[in-house]
Length: 261
Image (cartoon, rainbow, N blue to C red; front, side, top):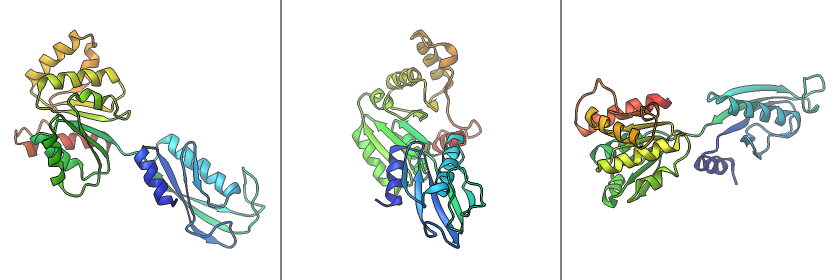
């Protein structure tokens, strides 16, 4: 398996990692320039030569993962008996430059409802490197996603009569947008989202009157008012008041992207 295969598998599994590359070698070193490995919190894939060189890079890579750093970083290491060595000395005599490139887990977004606005929103979000779930109880609405063009996002279409079944399986930290064609289903999804308690955000499409009705119902279900108020409704940017589906989708997307940019 190549490092690209490994990176793709980790991306699909939503496992954060760091790609470690020997970018240059001067003198003698265990591996040639271009050698790569991938480090996760628990695993290593490949090698850049072992010894202090590799363990120093791995240690720093795991520090980047723990700190949530997204920017690349360079290390320069000397391989001689006079160089500092925490994990044993390497006396190859050379000097290497190591590039650490974080491969963070992309943001996860779920759209419940692939109607006019949901489809426009899917079109916009599909151009971003995210994991995007689109769920609807109408197969024909999900089929319309085929017409949005080649996506950058990893899109999963989920046909579900009961959308809560999809919601319960979403990754922790997912940003949920609720905009189905059925207000009763919207309410059930709001309840299921609040029950999880580990989502990145919850947005509900609708007017302030709809929200006041939902807020009363959710509070009557037993959710604390401050928990209910974590749901954003109306969603989108208030300075874009148009009711055109494409404009609403732009507004919602802009507001959402600002939350995980």
